[in-house]
Length: 258
Image 1: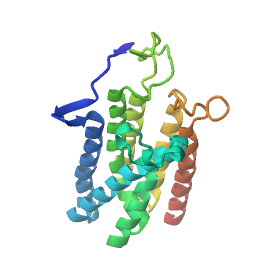
Image 2: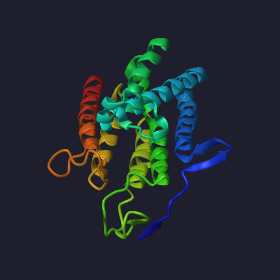
Image 3: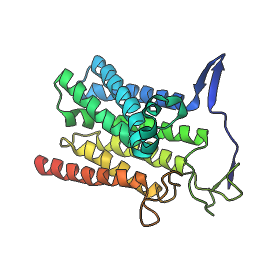
């Protein structure tokens, strides 16, 4: 068992300007994707300028889509009461699934600019994504949010302020699965040519499965609770279509490639 002591979410304060660890995790994710993108570009013929633009478009999609998705998926009642909550980003709240939709539209715009088919872009980009996913979950851990259910697991974490019962460190489970494991899986899988849509399909399938499983030990959002059966969460409802779509894309990719 480990004991979690509250970590200051502010990494650096310069007068009134405060730099939060969570923001630094986003920066780390984008920087990692940019570096790895240039590595992949050497094998695929993409230019450095295209990689720069790709990361910029993706960053806009993640930030805008993530915020809008959180408000609509997880805090819609507050949005209907006060639509301006959408702009109160300092209050926190980002959604992976909203970010995914935002990146989808950003890649459509990127593809229109460079005349690339959508799945050619997403197949190139998805192996770069887990760096940011893992870093974001580490940011959740530093912020002391998204803890899991009580557990007697030997790696349970005793969280100050949440009673004397150890809890699953669900943020770190996700950091390991959606970050490290997913990165290795996608990087190795995409290291050799694959049918178009296959890499994208694997990303959706694997991320969806990892997220769906961790949701069983992660506490649901307090204001939503379980939505059905005493265990189904909003995260699982939003993730299940990813699993189905990922399997469909992989099947279609290999049918076309055969």
